[in-house]
Structure formats: C-alpha cells, structure tokens
Image (cartoon, rainbow, N blue to C red; front, side, top):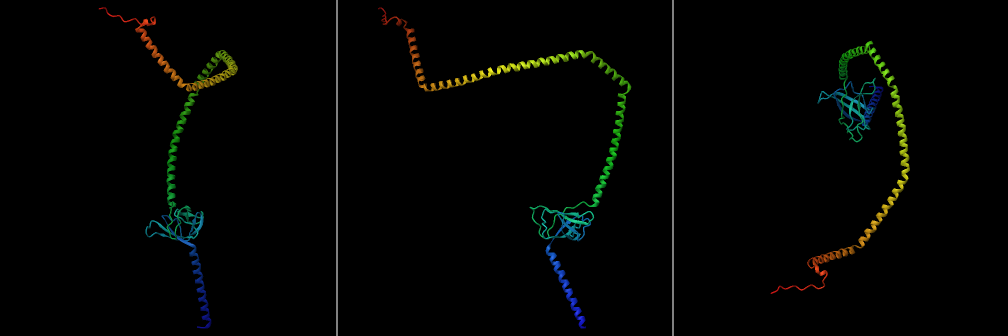
Length: 307
C-alpha cells in the first residue's frame, strides 16, 4: 500500500469517527431534553410516528411509535416524547387531535389541573377516545333517517292541518254568506233604532250623574272644611286632657307616697276600730239583757221567793 493510500484511509477514518461522535452527542443532547410517556387509544385515526404532540394547543413533543398493544390488541399503544419542561399531571388527558384541517393527525394532551400531581417519566397518560369517521358517518346516517321519518310525519300532519283549514274557511264562508249578512244588518238596524229611542234617557241619566258627582264634590269640600275647623279645638282639648292626666298621675303618686308613709298609723286605726267594734258589741249585748240600765243607776236587788 502506498503512502497516499494510507494517508487517505487515515483521513476517512478520522472523518467517520468525527461524524459518529457528532451524531452521538446530538442524540445524547436531545435525549436529555425530552421525557418518554405512553398512552392507549381504541382509535388512532391515522396517527403515525413523528406526529406532533400538543399540550394545551402548543407543540410539546412528537410521537415515537404507534402499534397494537401486545397485552390488549383492541387498544393502540402510543409512545411519545415530550419536552422536559412540559408540566404533565395526573389530570392531563390524551386524545386524538389535529394541528389544522390541512395537516395530519396529532396527539393532543389537555393541561389538566395545577393541583394535580406531576407525572413521572415513562408514566401512563390517561386517554379519551375520539369518535371515528365511521361512527360519525353512522350517526349522520341515523340522523338523516330520523329526519326523513320526521319529514314524512310532518307532511301527513300538514295535510291534516290543511284539510282542517279548508273546513274552517268553508264554515267562515257559510257564516259570512248573504243570508247571515242580511240578518246581521237587521240586528244592527234594530240596535241603532233602540239607541235612538233611549238616547234622551241616557242623556238625562248622564246629567244626573254629573250633578250627583258635583254634589258629592261639594259635600267632600264641606267635610274637609268642618274637619279643618274642628282640628284646632280638638288638638287644644287633647293637650289639656293630656295635662290633666299628667296631674292626676302626679296626685296618685303623692297619695301613694303618703299612704306608704302612714301605713303604721292606718294599722293602729284599724286596731282601734276593731276594739271599738268589740266594745259596741258588748254594750249592745248588755242593753239587750238589761235595758233598764239606761235609766237606773243602781240595779234592783234580786227578789227572793217567799217561804
């Protein structure tokens, strides 16, 4: 091998080592800035590896793998990487979404709750399945069938309503026909004649009502004047009565004080009256037994029975 070949091989080897080192450092740098998570959906909706991961509508990472779950093949396992500073929490919910109408599917994660516990790397993100296009189409077909039935039912009801309206119009035409119009005209003529005959009476009644109203107004004015004239004397009498009641109240208070002050004298007077009453009772009994004591000073001697 010539010297030029050896130098060329050495240079290529150095470039290969440098490229490998750069790739390793870039991967290591990116791997330190992202955190892996996983979630499961029943319908992936065309989600592919490399699809965007949105957190509250902002780009937060990317999907790394989309595959059937080995434990439960009815669910799709989705692996994703999210930036390290994205605050995923236990209340965050992952579901199928779209960045815009023209873009492909993306994985949308809600912001959850600030009070919820933060998810650790590799944790399971709770998920919520979105309706698939087939389900939406089925629901639209069901709605369309219901709309057709409703239109058919409405059409039948409208036909019934239109028949009732025709009957109503026919009845109205019969009621407003020439015979009934003539009868109504006769009734109106009779009412006009009755009003013409009774108009003088109505005018007299109206005049009497006006006169009565005027008389009532005069009576009310007189009553108001009388009340106004009597108001001042009544107020004066009430004031004097109030003063009299105050004086009577004061007099009763003084009497009460005087009675309390002479309470013991009243007791003595009552006792004297009781003693006097007892003496009078004794005197009365004595007079009943010896009435002559009123005219004789000495009592006669008692007579003895002769032997």
